[in-house]
Image 1 (cartoon, rainbow, N blue to C red):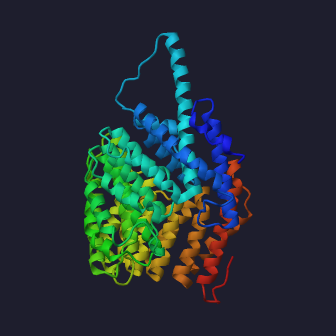
Image 2 (cartoon, rainbow, N blue to C red):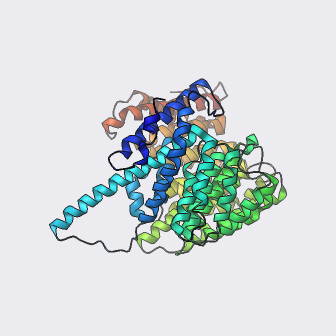
Length: 571
């Protein structure tokens, strides 16, 4: 066999040979994967002409790669966890997200309170640079190891599991927590490739390790559980890693461990998020999960308890998990919509507490603003979920309080563009949920609209509110149009304001006649004008395109809204 002489070269793993060797085998794996996909080959056959040589290399490669990583974890604490982060960020990058550089992640693991030692001796500086170059070289080898393990898993699929298990079983019960950390991390490196059936035994192992005495091992285990749920949780296909048989234990473990220290609790919240998100494509949340809904909500609210001791990352992760749980909740079950309604009131209380709290320092203002963003986001999701005929009364009864709180966010001294945008989105969701009934709450919003500067988002929400209220918006139209007229002086607002004119015309129909002549004049001016002095040169093309869209939407709304042929266009 032509490749036989190269099978053992990876065993050297010297700094000069290992990188080229692993690049070679990465290339081989990629070609095998590509050929298999082109030939639509499903199960991996050891006798396949595409895979027979990689099977011979497998028995040598996998144990050696894992042995190297296990040794490096003992030499450099937290390394395998950082390699997992690097691997996960690569997946996020494929979804359009920018991964954090691995070097930055390693820096984050260091104690932020340690003093930075300044080297005075020039000779020491040279030695430090040489050591850094050596560390970078080793780090590149580590990354190549992880990459190759993942590609081997995708290439030979279930066949990698027993080989990895041999390494795991020899380290998972070691007294040294570094060995247990490395053993758990090995599972995270091979999740893409093997079938659900092949990886199912590893789920039980991970659940067992959530009782590990070391918090770093537990945190990494919860992290890998989340990734497993993300990749292998397919309830719609009835072929996922989570079943009716193991779901109760999974929920018991996650709820219990959500009360752990922040480094563990944050990752547990992430696992709950991916578990819940898996049900988005299913017809409904299973009854087993519905029965645990109150416990899950309580656990996530407890983890995100607003206090100076709660890290923001933990709170944000818990609130994100809450949103995922709400989205997949089955409102056909009264116990579920009752729990979601109770959650809405508890989040409202937290938002009020956040708004009432004084923020004197810049750090406190930033934290207050971030809390406002996530709390408004959770309320938006809840309102949208309850916006149906059976449960909308829960929202309607709290609409006045909700709108008042959202408006307080808009005028809060610590608010930023992000928190204001999230508040406007929540207001739009509230208006769409309550429909014409939102009209009786409009005086609150009009006070804010009169004093608060417009933004493209707020203008869009005004249009949504008008469409939701239809004729009920008429008593407020004069004031709204005055505010929009003033906003036309800003180039960034012209396109959304023109679109809003179309929404208002659709909402009030023939009553738009009183505004028609002025609006048409402004539309004609915008269509013919070439004076965009306040627009940057590189932004002009995009600005013109948006302006044209706004003009078209305005004309479309006017033509569809005004149904009386006697009105006509009196331009």
